[in-house]
Amino acid sequence: MPVNKKNPAKLNCFFALIASGALTACVTSGATTNTPASQPAATQAPAVQQAAEPPAPLLSAEEALIKVKTDCWMQLETDRKAPRDLDKRSALVNKCVAEKTRALR
Image (cartoon, rainbow, N blue to C red; front, top):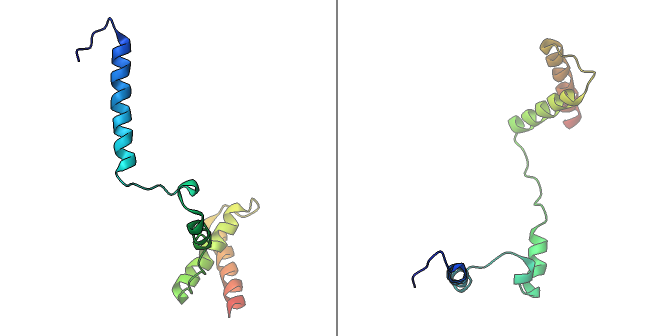
């Protein structure tokens, strides 16, 4: 089908035909979507139950210490009254870590 500039309606129909063919190929390829509307009602309920967060795994001693240090450092980062000097800040982090590790034991 020759397309010329004098008849843009033919060009629009041609592109619409190509686009609909591509969309039809996507739909009939067996691809599924994860939208709730595409799932039957029987499978929607288990999906909701699976969305719940699994319990947090137990941390090793090193991982727990790293988490405590990170929490203490971030607590000082958000505190506007915390000192900007790194030596003073480090001392406060060490004090916080000591308090939190005592509370864990």
